[in-house]
Structures are given as structure tokens and as C-alpha cells.
Length: 300
Image 1 (tube, one colour):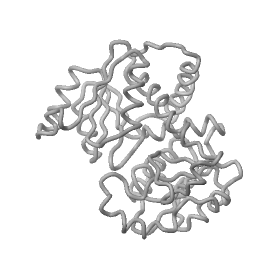
Image 2 (cartoon, helix red, strand yellow):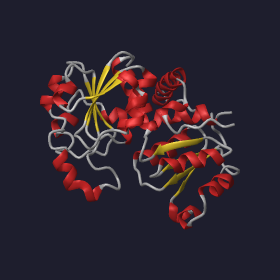
Image 3 (cartoon, helix red, strand yellow):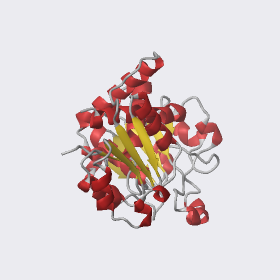
Image 4 (cartoon, rainbow, N blue to C red):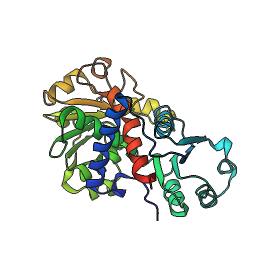
């Protein structure tokens, strides 16, 4: 049976830590100009029902750098967009390629795909989780500040797919997570409850940021929520990451954002462009973390 990566819970804490370490090694190797062909002649099919910059470029470049190939499939390019059952597409596609990455809306889509696939399936983002981003975020923290175990992280904003993945990360990497979100925008109660006392909801973002080691946020309206933009702007008005909020955090605290960012909305421009913002390293690390993941799942 193939291993899949649909959420951070699909790997053990030790496997996740090994992936983060391997991602750092692959980054150093690339900086030295070393060539790896760990996935030579392997093919990754990339299904995009949601558009992307970082996910597409990082997976496509990553496969090429590992000696393999990646093919981009939009709904317009496949029978999925014309109503073929997910199960049938999974059965057929997995007989032709060595791995499948899916970026879509419903999390059930990737779960069904994995159930009927002969090859590893990777969640490139769903409405419920964004686990690949967390691999990059954890790698970035490790590179700048060392082990995140025992640290405290503040999530400021919507209880969305990124928040859910941070909840799972708190479980798997053993840190405390404070979630500052307005009422009505809480994370999924089951996902939150499963994390036990590692995660707490703190309505006041300033209180949530007090003494933390990492501050993270995301856009107020994710893809597909644009029609709620005005309503969300009102609800999240007090949840911008500002210099004043960052001043409440530990003096060594970092700022992260999965991008794209809306300066002046969820984050002040002076925060995202400040020295303690590591968003560009975080974005680059999507490449290295996913190369480590592809190698782990597909280099058999």
C-alpha cells in the first residue's frame, strides 16, 4: 500500500522531523550546486482545481531538480472537469504515474482519490488542510531558531485550513498554539478538540501574542470567499498583525505568512517587510520541504 500525505497526521512525529532535516540538507545541496536524481524517470501528476503560484512552481521545479517530471492538469484538461468519478480518475491515473498531487476544494476529494490510488497522493491544499505549507513553516523555524518543541505560537485570524494545519503541527511537533480569531470564525471543533491542551482560543490578539516565539497569519478571505470580503473585513478589523502586536511577542519572535499577503489588511506592511519576518525563506522552503516529501514517498 502506498503512503499518502493528506494531513500532518499521516506521518509520525519522527518522520516529520526527519523530513524537515532532509529538506534543509536538500536546500544546502542545491546551494552547493549538487545534482540529485533520486526521482529519475518518475512522474508526478499535478491536479489543480484551485489555482496557485507557489504550489505549482515548487512541485514542478522540485520534480525536475530530482530528475523526474511533473505534468500540470487543470479541470479543463481532464475528464474530472466533465464529471468522471474521482474513483475512476484515481484508478486510471495511478496506473500511469508515480505520484499524484491534488490542490482542490473539498478534503473528501483527496481522501477518495487516495483510497483508489495505487501511488502516493499528496494534498497540495484543500478547504480543510494545507499540510505542505506546514512542512515549509517548520523547516523555516528550525533554520532560524532551532527546535520548535516547547515553544509557543500565536495564530492571528481565521480558523481556516492553515489554522487547522497549525493545530495538527502543535500535536506533531509538540508546541503550544494560541488561536486568536473573532467569534464565528473558529477552527473546526473536532480538529481543535483532538489537540487537547496544546491549543487554546484567545479572543484578544494582543493577549494571544504575549511572549510568543512565532506569530502567524493568513488572508482574511481565502479563495472562494471573495464575496464575503466586506463582511470579513469588519469581523477581522481588530486582528491585523501590527508592529504593536509584534512588540508583545518575545524579542526573538518571528513572523510568518503563507502568502499571498494583503498588506494593510491581515498584516501591516512594516511587519511583513521587517527583519523578523521570514516569509521569503518560508516561501522558498516550499520547494525544499516538498522535495524531501516527494523523495520520501516516491523514491522506492
